[in-house]
Amino acid sequence: MLTTILLDPFASPQLILAALRALREVLLGCWMRFGGEGGKRWTGEVLRGLVGVFGGVRGEDGDGDGEKNEEEAIEEVKRELGVVGKLLVEAVRAGDDVTFTAFQKDIERLVEVDARFRDVFGGV
Image 1: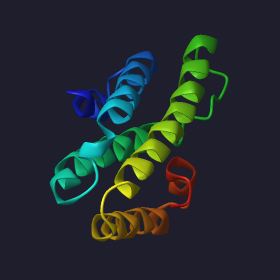
Image 2: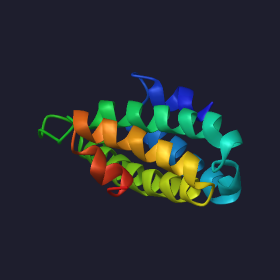
Image 3: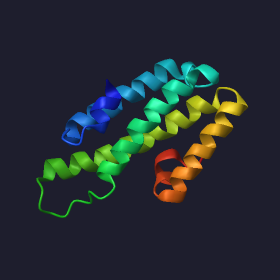
Image 4: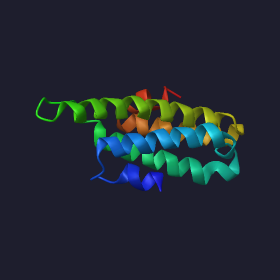
């Protein structure tokens, strides 16, 4: 459900921020499910949502035409995206080395496409 919100192109920045904060809490409470062979499904789903949000906000730099509250919400979404991305990295790192190595390769491919992904995932 959270990934659905994160991927919704019509979701408001406030709704996306709420979904990212909820996802942060899921990662903090269930981090052990993201490492290892069984965690690939969950890791992939979270990664898909984070990439979708990144694609939606990377060009939003507050051109001054929008409302101040919306611009502030977009900046907060960008900050929270980095927090959740780094939490995901640490959750996967806590699992086995094989899964983490595969995850690192996925992140490296994303960084090849757009170097700003390094900010989201902390330069895995």
